[in-house]
Length: 217
Image 1 (cartoon, rainbow, N blue to C red):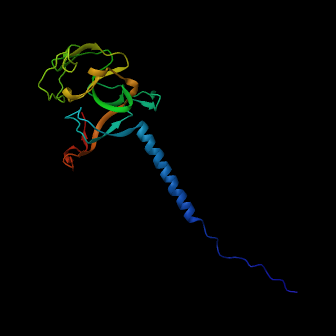
Image 2 (tube, rainbow, N blue to C red):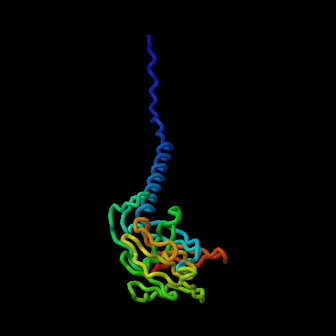
């Protein structure tokens, strides 16, 4: 009696190419996101300038990059420096957590370092008794405010405490800075601004092409 032979499928089984392709894409996206988060946390971060306190150096609508590695590798949220690299210097433009509201980021210029004696006399800035030459500083208000009214034009002398900075905006007559709210703790400094990569003038609805890729000093 003849027995039927089993039918053997000689065709190769189709590979799950669609599934493997989807997995590759997902893995690539995950790696890209992790890399972007790492760079943003430890290396470089983008910020947008919302106010005019740093005019004329920085305009409203400037988009800048901040070097977060230059002052050391810090653990996020706890402000602990894992790998110290360097300390801020006078004239550095720094981004930091606003002492009165840590959820906000401020950008100002370093005027005084730990141990420095800072004084403002008739709008002029003195550090350790020496008049500072500040070509980036602008004064748009011709009036001089007496010290009894506010500390804008007359301030100090005051000594910067250890592990702190004294900062001011370049737009000296219109900047809410260390003259009003005190010092910046070094541990909340996020990094140094170093370049404008984009600039949008919303009032004129155009790009400020001459400001693109401008290095900050």
